Length: 280
Image 1 (cartoon, rainbow, N blue to C red):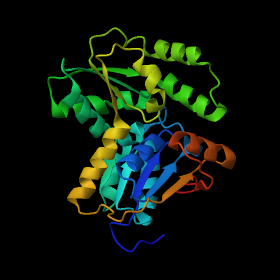
Image 2 (cartoon, rainbow, N blue to C red):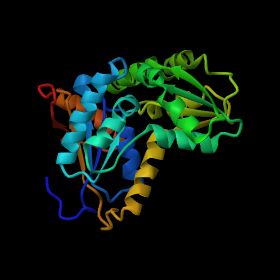
Image 3 (tube, rainbow, N blue to C red):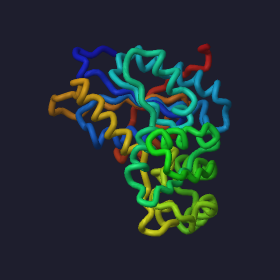
């Protein structure tokens, strides 16, 4: 894959599975003319329960590969991989690499009025303390209530694979049960600290009063990508729709096409396959 100019070069995006397509979708909406390559590591999903060193290894493999495709910027669209591998990836390649944690943390600090912020994420992300560190680096006075919610990830995965296996009221009950320790607290801002969670935005929002603002890290990350490319004079200026390339390590072609289409909102027929299993 070759590109004539740096502006025309693609933005690389990767996640442990398909949840990161919420970031690709946000990028598409924010930057409709940019070329995007998305890789979902479905064959090794989930990352959340894995050891940080293993997640870092996976992140480096994917980051090197995206850099070899001449990506002008790489987004780690996975909170667990951001926490475990962002620094290593930034040291490895010579293009900007950003994660989804700092954009979400910055938006939460800017949004909170009570200076009490909730964060829901996978076990790995919460255990890393990455959101706590990011928020405190911006405002040491903000109180952070963190809650691991792995059941929400599984709910999204099940729904994507099996086409809404739960009735709406049952899904809502499952979400409320998972969020129970956070509901009724005095937070006024809640960070959706996993790229799967925007797919449950309505169900999560209904668990809280109207004055609790939800921060979607996918949207915040897309805005940050625009800012970086603008400062670097690398925005693609041609008034043409960008090319979207979808790649996964999952093996079920029909399934991965259907899942990608559901998240992106339009039919996708050509999801490609790539495996890193044999690489060190």
